[in-house]
Image 1 (cartoon, chains in turn red, yellow):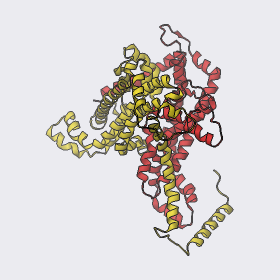
Image 2: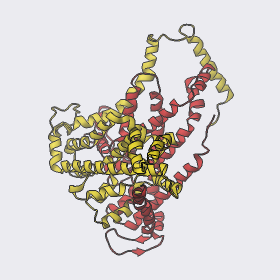
Image 3: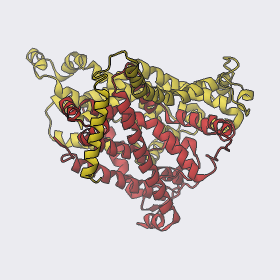
Length: 278
Length: 310
């Protein structure tokens, strides 16, 4: 009964991982029949070229800022959703909605908003007597733009997970602290946050894994990867962009997979003894 | 983070007490409809919620409004919020510039066929993992769990070589096949099946019903909400899937909507084309938005499941 699924997972998930490692040892132009085994040369080329620091730096900035941004904003939204007013159910669905929408569609909508000529943002800035920044042409601003949209799309996920955490906090502890005269800010930092640490850890891992795999928004908003080439995007560009460097692309994929594996192993190691105050 | 110094703690407690004292004589517990209470509720409760909701909705509303605008209404320095008329010319242009109806049909086929097969495979695998005895069950479960962590993105090149070698380039089966193995659905349904009381299968066992009948006549009917969750999450991810269809298709006849939208962007990526691109974005975003609006309970539960199961 389980066989078809296992065969499919084996063929299209596990086999490619092994193949990728093999491909990464080849000097191979995609589409050509001839290949040369070059051992670790692709890795050496990557790590000794300017690409390495640029791509790894972009990956680090994109991952850290999107993870931090969606978690902090997600927590703030969760706190707002946790208040006892009407309409929180609707608002909860609303903030979650972008998470399920097509990255391509969302990317286009925001590309229009950011358009330096005819975008809403440029119009608002003109009203304030400012010129619109060159979001598309300036590599650093492109990265900022993609990060903003990525956070917009993903913070609802963090908000809903944090909300579930907040709602499972023991009510008696909060009430006792309130009676002891702890104000809401202190209650939040001294009680809620420590009790939420398993949720925070879970979100840290899951959002980090998905940020490292972010592709759709980067592809649609900055097709050339100018300033936004993370590991995954660089691997795509090298094989399927202008260069057709299949072996080199496979090497970058292997590096990305190694990073994802380390994070997953860390999660499995620490998930048993996560910080918990009870 | 360093602990606050003792003096700071004492001070803040004093402040808190002072605040309490100032307020307590007059209104120990504010009346539900007093103006202070109302203001406070609005400021701390409604304002953040309204801001959060607007931040989500305004860009999507802007997309919808702009999809009705003519180039003259977009290529202008003063902003026109509402379109002059609700004409569908952009949609018509999008359809004639690229074969949008074809993209829509392709997306529909890929989503329906792909999601159906995945859900059936997930049900079968989860049933086997929970109710059937076979060797190496634990090892197989761990392998499925690990596959959950392996992103499709790192396998695109080997899968491209494999599928292209099988003649699957620019075919719908080539788009569907590599994604069919399902770790997510299997995992989620296994967790659910484990919560079912074994007693529900006892009567069937006595009757001599085989696994096949037990699965479809007993387990599936009592698991409809969980199966719906898996189905909806799968439908959403199939519909939105981008990187794989982008790589395995380069002819419009077999492109899905997100890939077709990229094609449209290439031909309309100038200022005047924004209205047409927004019409395209509406066609890819709105179907999922409607599904989400109707069935969000299942989708949110499915996508945030991991946080509960740990």
